[in-house]
Length: 179
Picture 1 (cartoon, rainbow, N blue to C red):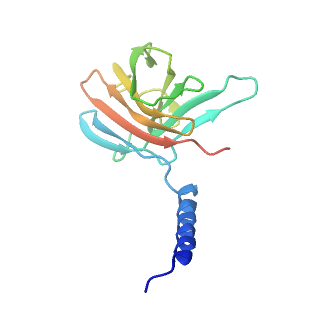
Picture 2 (cartoon, rainbow, N blue to C red; picture 1 turned 120 degrees about the vertical axis):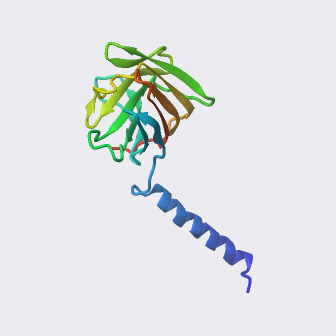
Picture 3 (tube, rainbow, N blue to C red; picture 1 turned 90 degrees about the horizontal axis):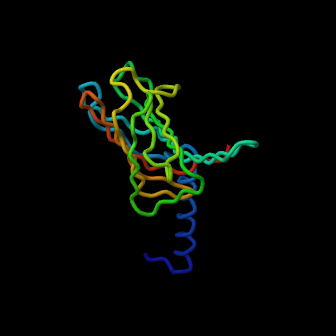
């Protein structure tokens, strides 16, 4: 039995509305990605925490801050409770084609080689900023933004360590909800 068009269209509209409610639900994963590579001589695959996001923050008396807050979950790594980075961006940054910024090791941290897109790079271990003592600060890295808009960011970053290990971390995140 087929339904007449005047019945099918309202049913289709209802189905789209219901599915969009699931998409906007706070419990629905908003971020995807992972870190893969070698860490301390072991092959690793760490998923991106689903609540990682693109953040636009404005505090009275301070310059507005836009950054990508990425937190990965190091599975099967007892000494590592969290691994991530905050990628600080110039205000109003947009990327429509792949754009890569090299990261250089200076004074115990990674810094962008140019500040026309990425203004600062903050490594995170657990709840603190910084890098693990072993393998230490990466000797070099890079971040590639495939797409960056006011509501989403997609790309990857690469860490290369002195011991020869390397991690490639991907991300696809949406703007964080208003606090």
